[in-house]
Length: 233
Length: 239
Image (cartoon, rainbow over all chains, first blue to last red; front, side, top):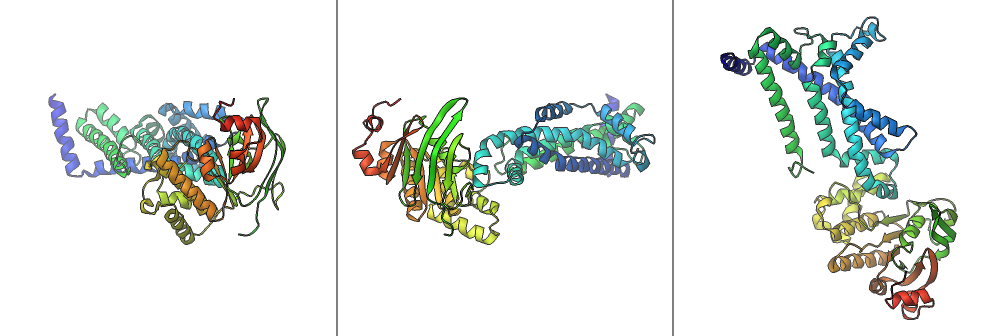
């Protein structure tokens, strides 16, 4: 218990003094996860929309695969990206293993199925309502997709946010492909894991508290963005 | 208006779905001028006929031809308002601007035309309100304003007052009259005799997917020629 309270105190000190190590780790974490989520959203939202409004052979299989990929274990994604980027792997020549870029790739792969699958579900429901009207008004496929994404923007933001939550909280994949190298690829989750196993609880607690605060801030911002400020649309 | 699309000619139009003949060899010409109401009991095929004419579904047999454009769907010149209005999750004004944007009308002209349409329909005061919070009657008026802003030659209305209370019904009927008065051909469905009496100048009566009668509204209402129409108008349960 003593450990715990002194850990909390130290953590508080690290946060208020803006400890350089701490700031560096937080900054890298946010950069990696934001970039991964941005890339995943740019691919996942249109992909979800296309799956929602088009019918083609094998579509059901794609949807089922996408839904199952939502539960993809991070360590497996880490392993796959590790093998792809390692020296003997197909992308080994790029020299990306143990860089933040590798971490972005891994997190993008983790988040993409979530954003695509949730947005497909949201947009299918909306398409059911809009379909005949949009066709009647003369909307082309690409215009319908843009309309659906815009009109479902608040629900889609929730999907993107869920993706961000998964990216920033995930430890297995970034540990494997990033290597948790100090001042290079150390992010909050890998740092917490390391500091905890070293028994250095104050930094671990400080990072944990900030991680939780980040989640609260992002969700709060989304709540305020919503015009009616209600939780359910 | 350039390139008139009327008259609309249906020739032996038949629609079968799952082996059921829902529209049965309808041959019919609709010309510019009268406010046409397609009348008949529920399930007669009124909405299907509307969707066929609008071009959202293709007939199994027969042809639907617009003047001057055989085989071509003049989507730009005709539009349709649905029984349950579909309004987009954006402002009232943005809803009216939407189809104009799809057609590539530039932003300034779009705003002007949408504003005009809202003023004409009495929705000018709530132009910036989110459309989804409007009442059913206002949403239906918005749907008509949106269609009107497109300046169509033909406007299809599918039971536009089916879900509305008397006040909403009166507003929408006034609006339909105004659109018709401004030179747009109205083709609407209704199963209500009182509404037909108030609005229609021409009636197309269908039953079980077949065309039973077509003629001026007064003559149809006062001296229907067919047994089915007589039964329907006298309030019998026509099945």
